[in-house]
Picture (cartoon, rainbow, N blue to C red):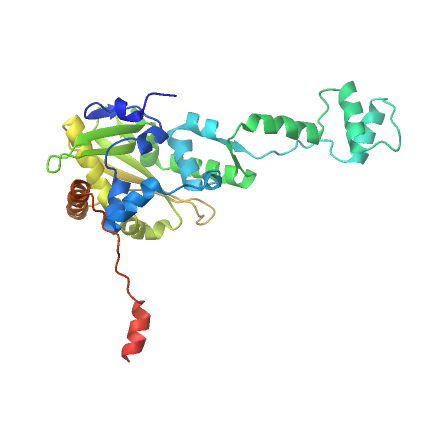
Length: 316
């Protein structure tokens, strides 16, 4: 067993941790505050509810793309393209018999596929027999998530699309580091707060956050729905506490759907007054978190309302 993550965080600063170590370790994250904002009990629920391990193996294009761009070594360790036999693969009984005959190897006309395969590979271990090649491919999967050929191609095209955008490419290729973990203490509450930054640039106070979206023309709704306007100031404030510099926060947004046969790319940032809205919200959420932690009471009853359309119909 490794050292418990909690012992690794001794003081504010930047720590090199895996995603699993970061997410299981101490400190309040933006995603924690999202749950607090919705209902404090949901944070306790998220920490204690069992997870379905089968869901972890499902392909998430956004997560895969994130790894491909920011952590290619991690991508290669966690993902593999599905097996595809070569064009000269020997698959059917008829093809096996033809291959044996071409090599002058005798076989029984009544032999089944397994026997024909064994006879061929005994004589020619390098013969491109589909079943043998597939078995060898399976050995190399080693628990990695399998991407279909179509998914693999899509990720490659999305990567090429990002690199075709000169500003996005500069942010990704400029000297910097990906997936660093920043920790600081909040002045008002004393709580340890944390952020796993997609990318920070060396010698420049810039935070780069990579997002994928199904509809890039409506990305502003994602900014609202997923509270990216909170993420911007929350990450920026933590960065400033650690580095004593006020950073610029930029989004690189890549579409997961094609537009005129391409995957659109945009580089965006929030205006300061809208980032301040997010700062005000995260301050309220962090104060609420501190209150819940101190009292041990995590409010859990939420108000629900009938759909607005239903109410309007009843009012007519």
